[in-house]
Image 1 (cartoon, one colour):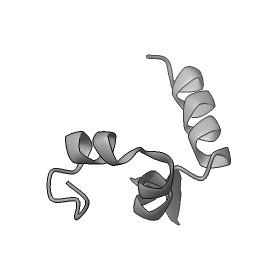
Image 2 (cartoon, rainbow, N blue to C red; image 1 turned 30 degrees about the vertical axis):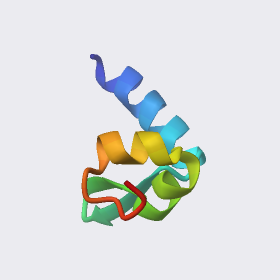
Image 3 (tube, one colour; image 1 turned 60 degrees about the vertical axis):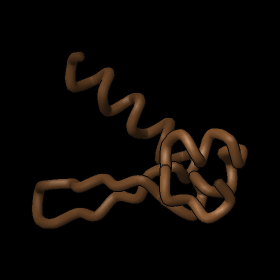
Length: 56
């Protein structure tokens, strides 16, 4: 995947509040926004993606 496509898709995920970005100098580090993912995923999908999820 080209850098421009990757940046485009990261921006979409950031705008949806599904990723959190931390910038250190010229580097950006991304991580999943766990709270938002728990909110938007159904209980069944949380069990698939997060086996230790407390509603399984």
